Length: 121
Image 1: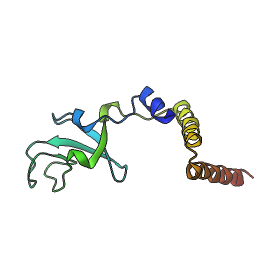
Image 2: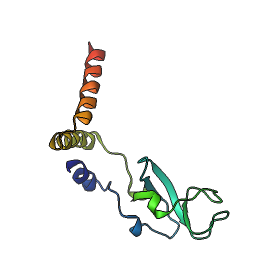
Image 3: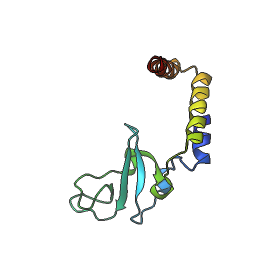
């Protein structure tokens, strides 16, 4: 997929959880269910939890196991993308949607385009 290739070029790609650092540094874990990014770190002895977990804060009563995430991004590598990168990603997204005939993705883009035209006129 084109989107994934471009994200890799910018260092913005998910790594397998087996490679996630367990030395206390923060990562962005992506929830396998919602796709939400969660800033967390590995805590070998969390208070109030039964064993090692990914936690968001010290003494958190909520922890996450590896299988909760479908991958991770090194927090220090995460950065905002410039306008050129966003444009490249948009074109790649459209190309990817067309390649798999994803009519829903393309219709969302058309609706957004229609709204922008209405605002300009």
